[in-house]
Image 1 (cartoon, rainbow, N blue to C red):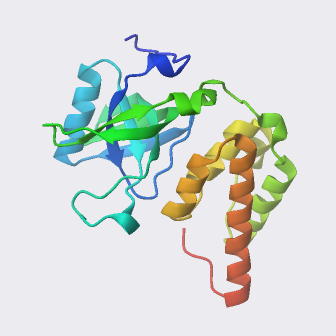
Image 2: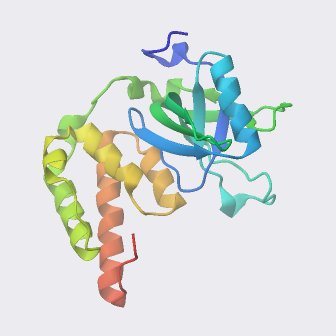
Length: 225
């Protein structure tokens, strides 16, 4: 596998991948996710990802609401695989890495493995459109998205690089806002499983508007960021 891999379709990805269950974590195609790896099992997972040449890790949320075993929670059925595109050793046994999203996947089955980390057989073909960059951008209501973002920033007394926002293509904007959003696992999962970019933007707007409405009704103070 070359250092700078370009995946053009589902058939170019392995059908069994290591998975990293992490509540509230949302990775989307072509998005970047920083990770601080310190648990021995996940350090081994990173080493193995480099050893097999693919450098792929599947990010997926544990479904805690339907998990009888806290030590090995049930997984949601959809996650997103990312490729390790940056890695640094922290000097204290940790890895600081960045994953770049490649494609969402559907879990077919979890494999019985000897590795300390979990592995799943997955299907990428359900999300074949993920391999086409900026697909469906023209359908996004950018004005409504920016209006929701402006309201959220105002309520939470936050600032943003508006030059960067205005210059960002719709796909990058929608996915970055979805990944950075402060919402819980159910909302993050809904954003992940959205069938297209337009729907993901609509879900993000709706969730933001509901959150703002709740704050106005309760009169609660915005959370510290």
